[in-house]
Amino acid sequence: MIRVLIYLVIVALLAFGAVWLAERPGDVVITWQGERVETSVMVLMAAAAAVAVAAVALWSIARAIVRSPDAVSRFLRNRRGVRAYQAVSHGLIAVGSGDARAAKKFTAEARRIAPSEPLTLLLSAQAAQLAGDRDAAAATFQQMAGRDDTKVLGLHGLFVEAQRRNDPAAALFYAEEAAKQAAVPPWAGQAVLEFRCVAGDWSGALTRLERNMKSGLIDKTAYKRQRAVLLTAQALAAEDGVSPPTAGQPDAGRERAQALALEAVKLAPDLVPAAALAGRLLGAAGEKRKATRIIEAAWRANPHPDLADAFAHLQPGDSARERLARVESLAGKATGDAEAAIAVARAALDAKEFSVARAGLVPLLEMPTRRVAALMAALELQEGDEGRGREWMARTLNARRDPAWTADGHVSDHWLPVSPVTGRLDAFEWRDPLAGVDHTGATIDAEQRALLDAPRTPPAPPLAAPLPASDHAAAPTAARPEAFAPAPAASKSDGGFPGSGRPDAFTSASDHADVDEESGRAEPSSPCGDSAHDEPRPPPVIALAQVPDDPGPESEPPPEEPAVEPGSVAPPDGWSRFRARFRS
Image (cartoon, rainbow, N blue to C red; front, side):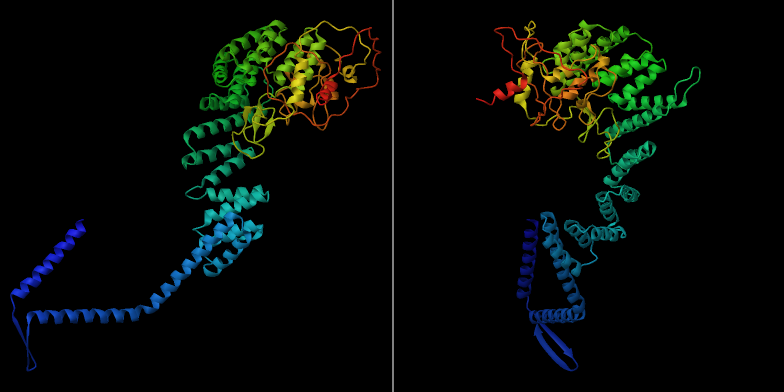
């Protein structure tokens, strides 16, 4: 609007001037070298304007002639730049779409037009990677790393290529070179941190973490958590190198581990490994009250078996009943949690308080996990019910998995600061290793559960049908937890029970004979249970094939079975029931 007004004002002034001159005519006389020229004012002004226009035109033509070489050069350069831009654009699109032939074609054109441009180098490297030419890609990235404008990009490419050829030393070198730049790229800072963690250089990892924080690569919350994890790892390493305590002599290693653990707890009070380690070290040092506060605070946030175990053995030399009372007080701070009930049941079994153990496990029998089933087996055996104990031992094979320390698909029986698969810091989580996995075999598992959950009935009269050979091999040598060996299903890679020497970490040695070595499927030896439940639970992985049951050692021949009484019928075994489902 303002421009329109200005234009109108200028037009009005010009019109006013023209009218003013027209109303005031006059003559102009020019005498030059004896010549006299007379004309009007308007003609003189028109002549002056024409001369000015002609002068400007002549100057423009002369200027264009003088500058024509530069103009032609600039035109050719712009046209070349447009062609190079189009070649690079089409080449990057071809790389993104996975068209190696088109990428190679446009790369050649871009290198012919603009061989030293950064985008041309990037396109050349990516086209070589797409074609599988690792050497050409590494050479191009090396050329980029030698330039100031593409140094970080070249180092990143060399880092990726080193990782692809499994060369951690070269990858660490390129990451450290990139981390020396003024503006540290996030990938370099994180890579150096992970490499030092994998190497066990906790001091170097802490230094790198400090630099990442100062460079703004991570926020304050992530910094505190990662620093707590590194301090815990450093404390565990210091504890491993601690010699047995000597009376009256302070242990510098133990004191250092305790100080590191306490600093980690201060940064992350809910970090289970740090709280368990700090509680254990403080308890050994006689600082029971401080250890109790630390463990209880972590327990409220994350109830965990390691915390319960550390709390139970907080006071060395306590009896089993005293440990039970201590665990019950801790479990009261997480009422209704499964870990609290399992911790009480374990402590009650150690204290021979079988009623307390059963009361803690009963609420968990709707969907029992392997630890719950193993605890029930140990409870039944210690109470003298060998048959029920064997049933629960068989049930542990197909029971739902317990939570375990899991990171990137790897299951560990203890916490680790970094993932052994990817090297990621603070990757382990306490969860079900198969959470979210679609299992198969629900039909078979439902039938087994129906058999195991059948109500107790009086013993049937002797039958003529011989018992499965697995029943003879499955008889335990003694009705106590010490008579059992760890089952293959409880391996670390399989997500089994962490720890050893606990009743819930044992299954019957006879279960080894009932497991298919290829599929891991087990056939229950006797179909009976304690109670029937209608609620479904997540089914385990059931094998598609099964081998005959292993009869066990042949040193003792199976005893002869008594004859069947008249009118009695032998019940079908579990496999017969399974086959009968497909006859209809």
